[in-house]
Length: 197
Ligand SMILES: [Zn+2]
Ligand SMILES: [Zn+2]
Image (cartoon, rainbow, N blue to C red; front, side):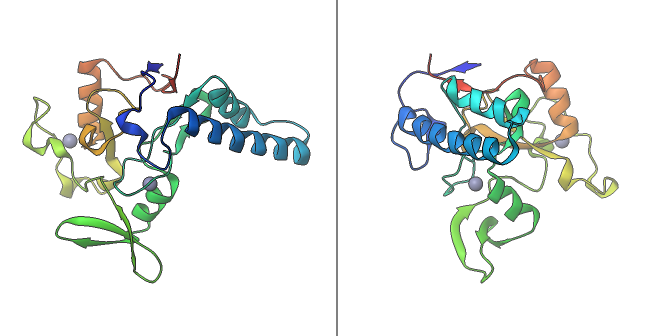
């Protein structure tokens, strides 16, 4: 678990002024979901129970990495409190190609092709093509049909709560795997919740 000071962290961009304000809002929202699920199904799913525990123990998710977006990041796995770097709607827009490119910048657009003021941080290539990780990216794009799907967002300092564009880079799974083994900060079950204690 990553601990932060009570002052506002860089990753807390978005509509909230304080950690407590965001936490209270998220607690309120999850309690509504819990109430609804109990009413409809008579019991709580493991995922929602874990999500409720997450907020109850004073944790919040960071803001989506994309400039202009004020949503929280999506869950990768609620059971392990593991998260992605983008929110669900940005991820969907990116995967469905709902963006236009101007001067190399990807702007998310709506159905009318109007820009929504959100840009996509994720690159469509491995940023280690220049060997910035200290070894050469072994991938030949042309020989890897799923190349785009192989690209991950990686937190440079290993802190998932420092989800600011300056701390997030795009690297392919091969480079990601090798770098994380060498830096030893990879653990798929590592809880990434930020708490206030
Ligand atoms: Zn977003
Ligand atoms: Zn690579």
